[in-house]
Length: 94
Image (cartoon, rainbow, N blue to C red; front, side, top):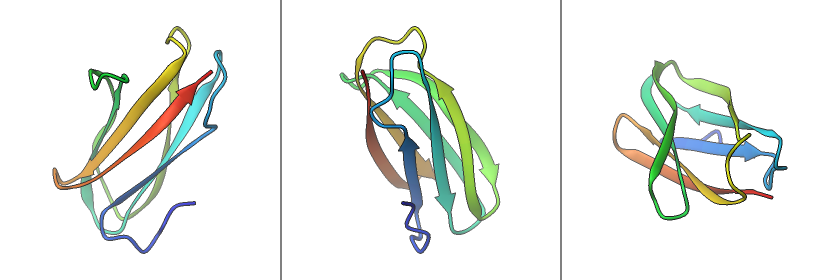
């Protein structure tokens, strides 16, 4: 679950692991108006896709990313708020 009391950015994803043909729901929360940037990286750290890059009001948001055509394995989702507070999570595609 999202820790709604955090001063930074909180990210959660489901399902994890995800199926080969599925998409993934990404939820993120910020406690104050912020510029949020969330990136998808491969296991070697190579950036693959910008999932979110926008200014948002305080609150919880969702976005979807489609993993069709991506290889099975581990990926990293890294988010930051105002270029500072950062969280990275791992998502596995089976």
